[in-house]
Length: 122
Length: 410
Image (cartoon, rainbow over all chains, first blue to last red; front, side, top):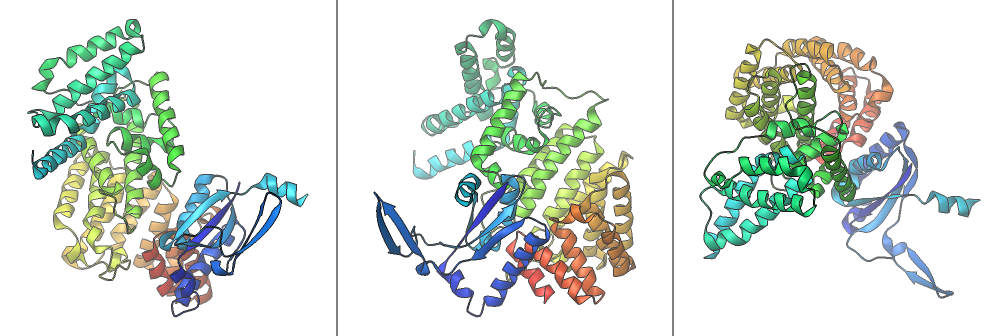
């Protein structure tokens, strides 16, 4: 089964990527990434820029709407995602628990819509 | 009734629920085999207590009061389901054993049977611990689910399924006979220890949700020892848990950082818990039947000695690990053996043990990588050490452990 780990981070965590705390931040992420790759469960994934750089597009009743900013407005913003290949939801949750963001933010685990992807890609 | 008095009544109810939950569920379900029914009846009785006791005062025998009310609703449910004829013997038993006299008398403690049912070979082994936590301790599914990293709804469904199997699958509430006892007891001990291990990791978390799982597990081990005072491994299990519990305050530095066992300040260890652990371990050794939990406890006991002589007898620890790996080898014990051997005979020797472990088996086992990184670092193999540190850091769930390793990695 494939799962996406959706990673939520506070504005402070986003800022710490560039400030003095960057080494602790980057080091933890580098190690987590390496552990995933070495364990053979890593499929793909990347960090995202702050939510302000996002754009939301919506088509409502056939009309395009383009909007600056994120889709949802909560304290934590989506900060990245990781796609892993593991046998079960339990295994995915175990990896999510090890994710650095699990202790300073939140990580959402959601099954990938493989059927939809197949339909899109094929 | 004043606010503070009402609070007092609530506390009493909480305490009675805590002390008596498992006893009452065990007693109510032993004849009906209906765990879910017994739990429902008991929670109804507890709700009734919350409304009645503040008004009328706490009854003289709160446990008997709860049993009487819960028993009535069990009987009502059985009647309602129109299976009176089939269940007549059950009804009679419930009535005979729990007549109104119960208000003042004792009722038998059936928790041992309940523990054996929860860890029954016909029940999915991954559900042994969750069932015990719910049926004997009354923990709710959401809390258990969180500890086991399982969605609450899924955990709820699995608990229901397991209870249905107990009710309909002919699983008997009984203490296994001598022939089956060792194996069946092993399953009970494993389930209790699993709860302890999870609680121990969980404890590092910032959030303290009441008593943590490690404490709940220690409570279970105490209950088991009370019910089976002459089983060496039960003593061993409790001794092991108490030695770990004794170090609770020393596991974090003043800044909240992680402190590994050999760097802990022994002055912060709880002497009373350590002494209690030693008593149980001594009691266990009288039986002359060593086992895995006694050996694990013995290793912790050697560490505890540091409080007296200021050093760790690694050779003794190595010997205990050798015995352990002869009778019940696991990845964890082989890793522990490697770490101890490195301390006793040099990092090279420890690393050789780690090298011999199947790499696939340790790809997600954090302690292996932490020990490996440490030994490689001692041997001056910097790039390999950094690689192993990365694995250990990436597999760590506890931010304090992660930080500790990041610092060591350099």
